[in-house]
Image 1: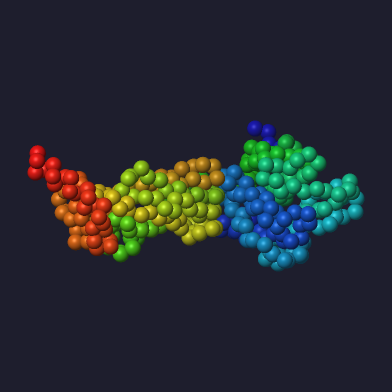
Image 2 (image 1 turned 90 degrees about the horizontal axis):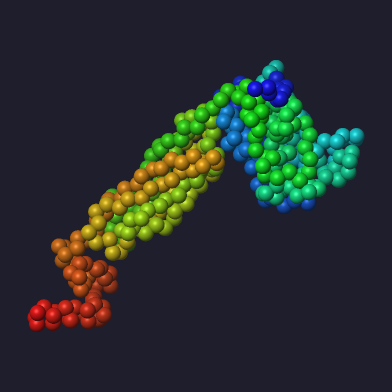
Length: 355
């Protein structure tokens, strides 16, 4: 394959996890866009490199900052901000300024411009891509981040192409094969290996058995034993077992860098369910947690809950309950039998005598 990418020869490969210094966003500097929309567009740009690169490199989002220093050397802050205009006679939409020690990158700051030599620039944070006449902030951020991790420009129509038009849609944000080839040339090829670390079930009274009406908390921690990051991890709890009722069924872990068991949004995934009041006769309930990431890769974790439910027809009525019309147990926590229940028992008694 004839590659079009060009590398400027500086990388973060000297770090244990390349890119781990992360990036900060001066969100308040962006005029004519709401901070939440700018933050989401910027976060998406980081996710694209992390999720689609398939390399042992991870670019953390270190949140917002009021820092306005760009190009100031290795100050420990990789800052992205917006400036009213580019330098005189510049046609740039944005630019990156990196610092290095030999071939080792130590700092990189990004500047977006409100105007250039051609006039005012309109920036779009639309999740579906920029409309005609506006420039896609996410697409441009992905390009500038490419410079920050070691790319110059590409001679093919990749993210790292030297020019970009307005009105770019979602499809233009994805990494091109050429971008991925360049990334692998710098950092090698990584592999995702997401595994279950620890599954814990905790019932309210702590005896390890779910009783009728009792809440059960499920906690699942994951570990990334691979060399590529997992991005946007989501867990969904599901079950068709009638002896349990699902309460909290969705949980997000965020990103899980290589070698980590702690996500960028949470330490673990948490779900909850309640044992059904009418779980009579059940001794075990089953469910499963499906884990997906950015690419939809699935990890299915089975869940088994030991139950302590009254046995139908053998336990007899509990002290605070009554015998129902079918001979099973129905617990009345008020300690007395409702009149409606007695009315059900009377016809049954009569049929037995006359039958």
